[in-house]
Image (cartoon, rainbow, N blue to C red):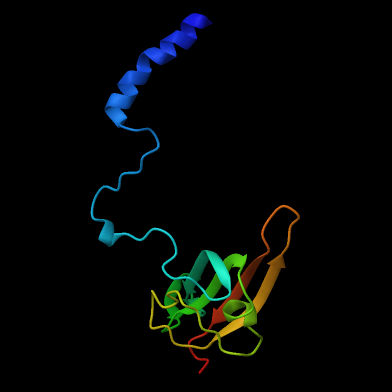
Length: 147
């Protein structure tokens, strides 16, 4: 067993020489072309996650006489499902969202499509834990024909 432990240390100088300092982060390529983390902070929470799902609300295959799709009806613009999660940091911004009121987010909600349509709150979940931070998860949606 001692031989096994000693054999491990035999490779340690080689690893340090080859890989440099263990745990260091090196960005290879053009850092300006990639984004790491959340682009902008949201008001009212310390943002942990922003997810936007873009989809066609209408996406129907129209079958011909043989039962095979011959035509397709698809929306001209994207609808969006938006989820924002984070730790509570105040009573404004996201923490002041209400039903039937148009919402505004700091982060991109129009990466795909033109971003038309009012964003409305669908649901909000608040979580409080004994050994954790008070957090919130907000779900909203947008349909392009909502002015």
